[in-house]
Length: 241
Image (tube, rainbow, N blue to C red; front, side, top):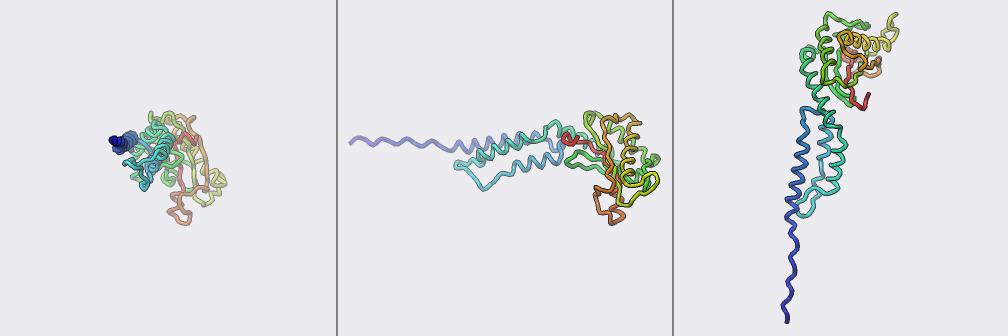
């Protein structure tokens, strides 16, 4: 009888573990290129969500990411806002936090962000008397000058801005301001006039008055009404021009 032919050995699958590790390291490398100090919270949340893979599914050989998951991750990364836009907004926010530190500390200004962009809020009671749209220049001149400096800076030179006036729900009802619509709009306009007087390009701005239609807090308390009386200056995201 002839010798029984030896069956060929099955190809080793051990390389899959190394390959999977390499892919994971590459993904970590590209994600690490996003500097957390220079992009906004929305971008970081999107990146984090895209990395939340289903850890219960594995592939024989140690490869822990399936082709479908890798494709989905690639699509999500490609759909992120541009890195340049993130850097620009991040740099603007860092400058604002640094420049307006005295005003934030004295509770004249707050700095936040949402889907519209970076928001600099002027707490109205520091800048206007109740029921008035005349700026309190003597008390807020330094803050207003810092605002003018900020809006002339290179970090935001190609951005668009919107100044929004807001009131509480107490009706103005005066000869000059028959309703809160006129009062909120006039306050926003006066802030823009002041910035323009100090060299800010007013063509980059739009103005809106919202009266008491967009409160941040309940108008049932004096403190809530005080926070609702405000002027928001927004460095607009490209999608909100």
